[in-house]
Image 1 (cartoon, helix red, strand yellow):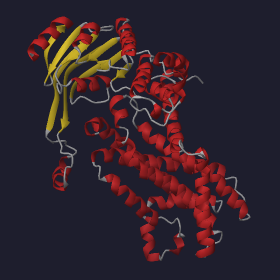
Image 2 (cartoon, helix red, strand yellow; image 1 turned 45 degrees about the vertical axis):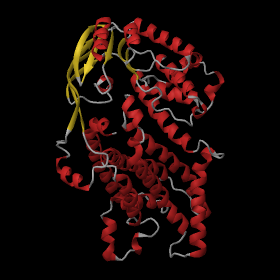
Image 3 (tube, rainbow over the protein chains, first blue to last red; image 1 turned 90 degrees about the horizontal axis):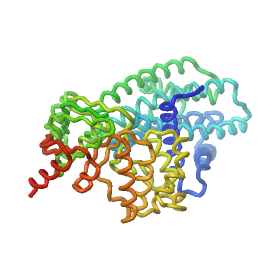
Image 4 (cartoon, rainbow over the protein chains, first blue to last red; image 1 turned 180 degrees about the vertical axis):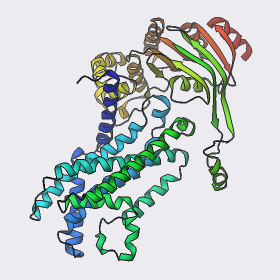
Length: 257
Length: 241
């Protein structure tokens, strides 16, 4: 298929912005891109030591259980935490060059997605280590959930990035809210471990279903469609609101940057 | 071709730190946007024919840069209409979006694609860009190692190699040393005389007279005079004393 020049140029731009995000992160390090693999590896090592030696939970294969939720969460939380500064740290670009500014948001999320993908081999190795094997439904489940989560993050990041240009206070709030969300999501503890009367707090959190869907897939080898559907609805709602907010305030962006 | 009708542009006048009280008071009205506003442009109309070069002069704060932002499309007019035909190439802030840790080539590719080319097109022109910038082997170094003059040379070289159709220029002729200034000035003049539609903002009256067919003189967001370059410049200089 031949793309017209304009489409080609836009795709190139997006690709270069993603590449820039990724290469810049490790630009002045010796190990470079290897850190994308090393980071999740070291994280799991720390958790392994912490949970298999010092603290013991009543969950089988706890490390795998933990990481199957923690890696997707890391993609989510890192992207959302970065989102307030995406537009405000690119003022000269935004005010002096014409290009689709939402590409900056897309590039940030995509570069974090690459990190997430690099953490998957760690999961696969651990799965074998604990005597299991990845199921065939990973091939459908991972891309599907990745698309859903991408949409969720994109919607949220659009809102936060543009809102922060108008209310810079947001920058400081987002970090706190993300860590609140972390504890409101069953990541380092199982949903069932929460007393029934408190479970309502987890079930009103849309991220719970998304993270549970990941864990169902990566830990239990099950595509839990109920969680997937709820996550899809979340994604659609967040995306629509995000696009609306972004399109509403983007034309005024030059006045506040 | 550029056609702008009755352009108005205002900016909100907000204090740097709005304060909680102001926030609470303004929050409900935020969507309605009823802040104190500063009018940077008040009803400016202009048109530039294909291949024509229009100069814009005026004192600091007269609205020249605002006008360029609107024509470029990075800012939206509060009121009025703009029509621009052709690929717009800004020569506003050279090297916008450059990253210090990327090499000259890497920055050139990103910058070129930002200016509207595909990656393949830019790579095909890379030889010419490097040659014009006179950077030699430095092109493979991170640009944080460049001097200010080298940075400007690279940025300018990229910009003029992106086959502009509509050039929007804001006071950039002071690029590099004496010999590069002459070279870049000539390259720019070739582009302008070669049929590129140009809007040229400058405080250098000599440059304006050399580069522009017609000039508008902005004062406090309005057009004070408009006409043949030499005449308007003379009038402007007389008024400044």
